[in-house]
Each structure stands twice: as C-alpha cells, then as structure tokens.
Image 1 (tube, rainbow, N blue to C red):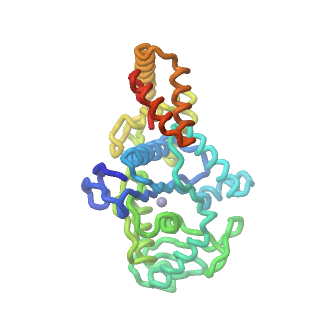
Image 2: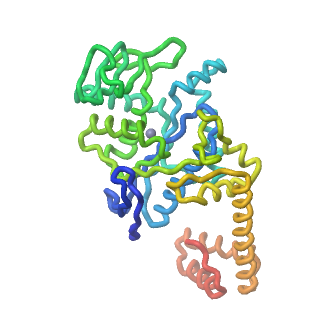
Image 3: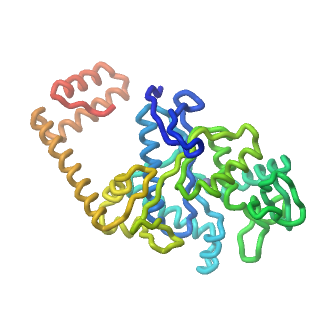
Length: 359
Ligand SMILES: [Zn+2]
C-alpha cells in the first residue's frame, strides 16, 4: 500500500499537483513510444530514462504501476524506408523495436508492463474510429476518416486545415488493413488513444512523453479519446525536456543527433544515463563530450565509493562476500520452504554483523 505523497508538474494545469491515483495504491501510466524505423537517438533515451526514474520511484513508494509504452510500427516514415530497402515494413520496424529494447537494457530501463504495437491493435483502433464517427466528430472522404475539430461533419473535403486523419485510405505500395471505410491504415494519433484505453481504460492517471508531443499529438489524443468516450480522462500530463547541442534541440529532422549506440560505444551506458539525469527532467540538457566525460567520472566515483563501503562493511563483519551471499541465499531458501524460524535466525545473524540485506 502506497503511503507517500508526492508532487509532479502537470502540463495540462500548468502547476505542480499532489499525485492522487484514481485507484488507491495503483497507478496507470502511458508513455508515447518510438516510431521504429531507425536506431533511437539520445533524445529518445532521455524521455525513457526520465519515465523509468518515475516508474521506479512510484514502485519504491509502494504503488502497483501499470506502465504502458507503445511501439509505432505503422507510419509514413517506416513505409518510406521499407520501400527504399524493398523490405516488409512490419519486419523493418520489428528490427528497430528489438534494437530499441537492447538500448533500453543497456540504459537499465525496466521493462514496462505492456509494450503494444500498433499493428496488433487494429481492431481497437477501428472500433474507436467508429465510435468517433457515431458521435458526429469525424467525417469520411474517399476512404479516409478525418477528425472534425469543429465537431461538425463535412462530407465534401477537409473542411478545417486543423482536421486530422484518423484513418488513411490505402495507397499503392503501402501496407493496409480492412475497415468499414475501405482498405487503409490508422492516422498518426489514434493509436495512443486506442491502446491507452485498451490497457488502462479511458480514465487513467499519468500520460507522458517528450515536450514536442504536447501539440499536436497529445492535443489530438485528448480530442479523439473524449469524442469516443465522454468520461475519458487523464489526470496528469507529464512532459520531459529536450537534449540539446549548442542549445539547439537534438532531432532526427535537424540531423544533429547521436544514436544511443554511437554514444555507448564511447562511454559506459550508465554514464549516458547519468548525463541524461543531470538536469531537471523538464529542462533541456546540453550534450557535449566534456559533459559526458564528467558523467563517466562521476559514475565511476559513485561505484568506487560503493565498493569502498562494501569492503569496509565486510571487514567489520569479518566475513567474505561469498559467505554473505551464501547466507542470503539460504535465508531466501528457508523463506520459500516456509521455515520462517530459520530464515529469521539467518537474518538476525546478518543484522548482528551490521549487514542489512534488501528485502
Ligand atoms: Zn502517443
């Protein structure tokens, strides 16, 4: 049972708020994932390290966290690259999803509870679009479905330039799925509304992502989710800042980025993690070789310090590390066999020597 109060800045209300989960002791958190068509860069790493820290902290506070982070495997950029390489777009994106997971492991980011792919949730996407059409918040043009930002269907053409696609009609050379509106594929924003509703219901606690997703992606997500289900509600919108270089946002479109694996060839992944966490999560963190080197030294110093502490503790306890590990294992075994008396006896022996094993 979670019993610690904490605050987070909510982008929606523009203020810090005490986090009060909808269900006591449980937190539902959805974080927008990558569009998998290339290796992820350190701007991506920053987002997922920031939300990993939040995930770990929530768990530390005792919350049971349902953390959902999606993969976009159906998208214009993926299709374009797959066509260039003459490869199936889902298999191309699968390769980069795997590479992303390797990067996340290197950065010691815990696995989310669920990691859904867009291509696996077409049913939920189609039924959400159908609900939006039913509520008169979307209109159909030539096999495509558009969200009407004016909440007014227009069957002629895209009425308001701000209207956006929920479903795109199939074009030659593109993967497509069947739908009531003809062959096609989902628009850019609907997947997060559909998948968050599927895994966390339409009303959940925390929705996160990079700051550049506030508009239009999250604005559109809110419009879609509320149109499909009037009780849809996310309590806290959390956004992380950018990685910059020479104070300019690092991004794939600007070409001023480094992939996670390029950087972790130069330094230990934990040094990269440390560097990414070295600024407040909403502030920019400026990348330079010097800052990365400093992070490496600081991580090394931390580990050296921990090693010193361990050696001192073992010396004081007059034990070798293997002895301690063996006692911990034996205690775990005793607890498993429900021999609590023996388990407690080993615990007391460790305590008597100043060693406090983790639960
Ligand atoms: Zn999203």
